[in-house]
Each structure stands twice: as structure tokens, then as C-alpha cells.
Length: 177
Image (cartoon, rainbow, N blue to C red):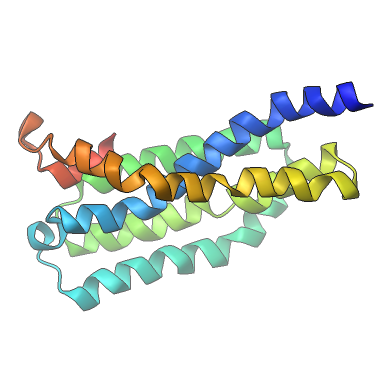
């Protein structure tokens, strides 16, 4: 039984943890982009920026349950990669918005796209592990957020030095990459 658990851990946890790490990076990129001039380029006030942040969480909260209903009607094997693809496209498009309205739409869409990942992964792990085995695996998975927070700013700082490449400001590259 321990060998099976170890095999499950090695097969499931690394890719799921990487997905959550990427999700958390996408979620926090907006703060780094603001430091690199996004607000100025899009002509946003501080209140408008905060409205965009709020819209992300509105989309996230409103679509958590529908995403998990879809997850139960399909399979995690198809639904989680689909969510990942959609949120990757949306995150990339955040780098090409031209105005405040585009910023709002991109934040709402990103919240919707990412809403199914965390609850979906927890549900998925519950299908593979016994109740007393789940807490450790969920904690490992959740630790990716701390890891993303630890190096996300440094990564964004490095990417932002690409300003001018392809005619884009550095903050746009934070989203595109």
C-alpha cells in the first residue's frame, strides 16, 4: 500500500502543484504589472485598478460551483487541462489589453477561468486518496502558492526588463510570458 501511495504521489502531486503555482503567478502578476506602469499606460486610477482586482474574485466566486458541476459531469482528466488552456490564453491576452474596459474584461475572464482549479484538484485528490491521506497531499499542493509568492516578484522584475521587445512595455511581457 505504501508503494502505491508513493507512486500516486509522484504521478499526481507534481503536475497538480505546478498548475496551482502557475495559477497563483497569473493571479498575482497584476500587482507586478502595476508596478511596471500598467496603470499609467491604460489610464487607470487607483480605484479603477482595485475594481479590476475585485472583478477577478467576483468571477472566481461565482464560477467555482458551476466549474465543479462540469467537473463531475466530465472527468478531471479532460476538465482540468481545459481550464488550464483557457486560463493560459486569458492570462496572455491580459498583456495586450489597450484600455480600462479591456482590463476589466480580462480580470473577470481570468477569475472565471481559474475558478475551477483549486476546488477541482481537491475533488480529484479525494478520488485517489483516503480521507486520512488527503490533508498532507492538499497541504503540499497548496504550498505552491507560497512558492509562487517567493519568486513571482523576482521573475516579474526580470521579465519586465524586456520593455521595448516587440514594441511592448515590460508589464505586458509579464502577462504574455
